[in-house]
Image (cartoon, rainbow, N blue to C red; front, side, top):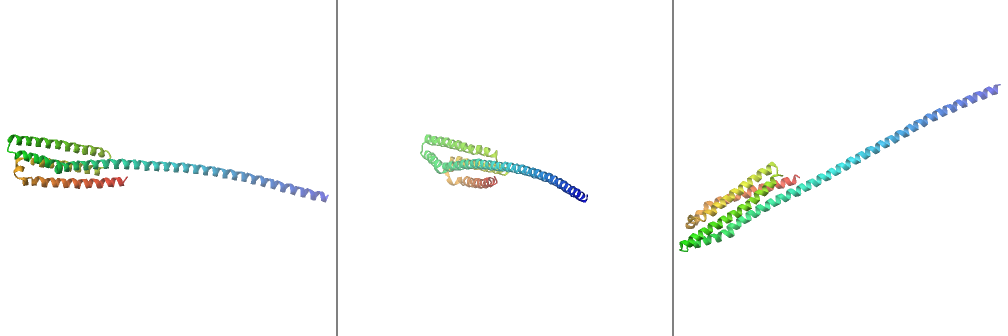
Length: 232
């Protein structure tokens, strides 16, 4: 009887132990499963975050590259326009200098030869030819100045207010210099100049002043253009 009682107690203990074991095992298994699911969820979330950041980074890289290309195009476009403008100014100055150094002395020599020929008809014709050649030169130089002004208007489309003001200043200075040069050339075809060559000095002085103003305005414009190119 005692043996059966002991056996029943042992069996009950074993059954209870097994029950506790299976309960703990089931609970642990459930915990491990939940933990595994949490880990998988975190991994999925991590991958999504990585993918999102990678996509955003690629987008930033593309935008940065696009900005670089835009700035490069803007720089090259501005540089080309600025270079063309200064080339036209240099061509205009070169042709103005050519008038004074090459063309006008020859014209004046023909006028003077007619004046001292002793023949009124020859003198009148030489004056007429001189005035005609002078007007032709003026018209040609005026065409060159118009090219400069046209290019100046193109630059104004992309110019800053500071650059726009400097373009106005240079345009005004070129106009004044051109008008002073025309006035001097016209005076050199008058009897007053032929009788007294020194009478042209006031015109020469004024032409020198206006020419210096052109150079000053040109240099200021060039510096501003360089600054704006560096700012791109």
